[in-house]
Length: 223
Image 1 (cartoon, rainbow, N blue to C red):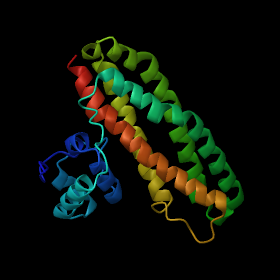
Image 2: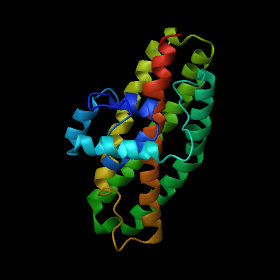
Image 3: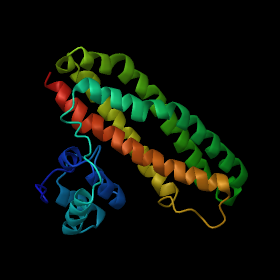
């Protein structure tokens, strides 16, 4: 395995997609923090880098089939994948999460007013950010890349990456407010479903941002 402690997290995630399972398990940022060496990322999370390397090796050795190397696929195919696997599901998932968050806030808010207020506010901020962000990609950036003009789209890509950083910060806040998505014993079914949905959203957005920040944008800049 060609991964070392000095390999950047983003490179590992790009060349070995199954490694993202390990990164997610240990809370290692492989999207916006993709430029960081693996050793530094592990140190920041208090995780032994050799353990992480071993887990990545196990994931790769135990794979049932080849993972798609999006750094080797045509840019059109990568954009199509981002739209189908990440953008379109969010059209339905974000309103569902908002509905659950409002219901949990209304029913359980008095149990911890400050926390539930902050949770709803952050959920709404995530939804708003994404709903403003995706059309800019779909109407401006992606068409430029499809037309072979990625080299002239460094400005839009920089804006998208800054917005990704903002979104990553909101996701960290959600994880803190939910105590790492550990479901309280007294949680009702909607509360439990909300925690599961938010954790799934975090995982999906990390993968989504990784594909754009670490694969699509660098390749498009070379067009």
